[in-house]
Length: 178
Ligand SMILES: CC(C)(COP(=O)(O)OP(=O)(O)OC[C@H]1O[C@@H](n2cnc3c(N)ncnc32)[C@H](O)[C@@H]1OP(=O)(O)O)[C@@H](O)C(=O)NCCC(=O)NCCS
Image 1 (cartoon, helix red, strand yellow):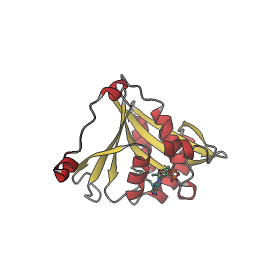
Image 2 (tube, rainbow, N blue to C red; image 1 turned 90 degrees about the vertical axis):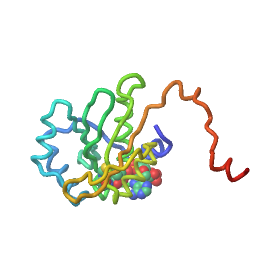
Image 3 (cartoon, helix red, strand yellow; image 1 turned 45 degrees about the horizontal axis):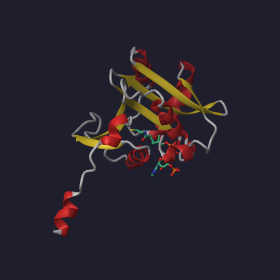
Image 4 (cartoon, rainbow, N blue to C red; image 1 turned 180 degrees about the vertical axis):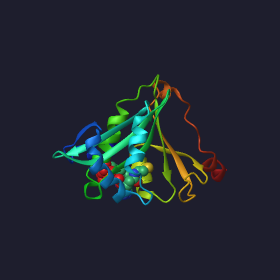
């Protein structure tokens, strides 16, 4: 877990559990407050009917204030929807939900988390960067609704062999020095 998530997890007491149908009213309220092109109730239900699709919610004082939907794939988890209600942001709830996902990764099987984030969604990009996700590539015209590009972001479990990797020299610095 990164420094940001450890610090954040001390801020608000959150209960993270599986999503159930009764949560959908609060989930939809947070969804509509968070996204210009929001999912409908049917979108959530259709998604959660898939065998590899999992929903989680974060509760504070028995109120649902955050949710996350992800897919299980052979070698990765793919985050497809995620938000914290605006009034509860920057209190560490998002980081605690992502920490829960980190706990489901193993270095030999599901070793990474992937997600697409809108090019204009700087807040989310900064959030995921703070949790050690890396932007891997641009996916042009990814969103059918607006035609916007997406960044593919990934988090990898540290490989046990990482310490043995060569220390790459910075070629640009070398060039400038010569
Ligand atoms: C992205 C989102 C889920 C983050 O949830 P959150 O609970 O506010 O995040 P946290 O409080 O756990 O933030 C953890 C760290 O991430 C970084 N971070 C979070 N939001 C940030 C922002 N708006 N700007 C810069 N850094 C940010 C910070 O380093 C923060 O630690 P700090 O508050 O101690 O500085 C929330 O902003 C959200 O719901 N956004 C709208 C929906 C959305 O964009 N979802 C993602 C779609 S890909």
